[in-house]
Image (cartoon, rainbow, N blue to C red; front, side, top):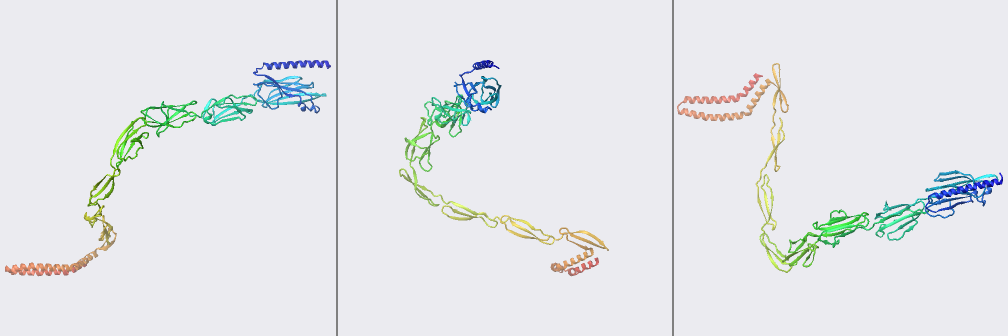
Length: 634
């Protein structure tokens, strides 16, 4: 290729590059921007050569290419060299490259945002090129440009990297009160803390209620103490290192309690006798008025309250609180519309009096001087008490105090003699004597109750002088015995009965005779003409057997035994009968002789003798007769 041809091709290429540059400028101008546009050089020839493979070109003073970036931001920019890793607030840019010698050719361009390629292009040719034009968003950008270089017929290539960050976001405002979030324009009674949040934070600006301009600090946080001197509007905003400015926020520090007002002409801490109206107001927030009567519970009824003069008399308490918790001190006022009324109370021990009333908010004077409720008044003479309810209502009480006599000596009365008490007035010394009449004996009675064997004993003793005498009361009541069998008798053994007095406990024992056997025939057997009976006691089960022959012998023996036992009595009975009979017969014989009936008398004598002999024989022979009969039977 001829030199002329080379020059022609170079001229054509230069024209094309000029047209491309002009188109880029036109495009940039057509892009809507609000501020000035500036060209900023970010690279100048040196440095890239060191990345090429040709060792002879390292450190050469010759330049190879220039990279420039043109951007728009919210403020005017001036030209200059940007540092790698710089921060920009641009929202549009144009990146250009221009070779500075005839040996350098464009090869490749890439633009990355936050590690992701957003634009790539394969390049060719020489001279000026627009590599990228477009909007910029917040993030980290890396520009990579690669060029080729030919020296002594040998090709070389090298890359250039440039890093920059875009920050178009203003600092974030964080407004807190007492640890909680607070909206701009809000009010609070707690500490206010304003914090600006931005990775490229620069300065924080604040204005107090009394300031005419903003103050600033490099700290990203500012606190306002909750106290009355800081009450009012506070304003805040912040900027970052590239000029982004946050919106202004405001907060009202409210550390002033509401204002409480009373009806015209009234003031807290006084006593009034008319209708009371109380209201509470606050410049910043709504407020509540709290009321209570005496020691009752607090209540609220909005921010106003009226106490009519017909309401209960006494002390009413008030306080107000706004929406931010600011509270007034507790104040009070006394309503006293009742007619004052009190009572004079005379002492039970002397002639003194005291004056009392039932309302703690009333006051009184005694003879023109202040009087304390309940204080004893003992001065003789006429007095005046004026009771007031402190609301221009009064009532007068007139009274008089006479002598105040007190006992100075005493002669006590006895059971049989009067006594005397001498009295003297403690005020004027006036005296008199009072007779104390005897009351007679005053007996205390003690008694010992009557018993089963002794009478009641009553003793009388005078509690005053000790005189005594005694009498008898109720007679002995006698024993009231109750018997109980303590040991039951058996067939063969005696029993016992205990007899005890239910009143005094006197006891004696009575012996109970043995019951004896209660036999019954429980078995009858016959053998060889003889009958045997078995007898068993119903109570103790004792038994025995008896043959009938033996029975008669036992009977005869028993009859003989009876004769032997009772024969002395029978003889005495015979002799007594014989004596009586002899007298009767003698009388009859005498009568017969008198009547000269000797034969009759003789027969009577013979019969008398025969009768005596027969009775004697019977008495002597009866046992033998019974024994003989028993022998015949057996």
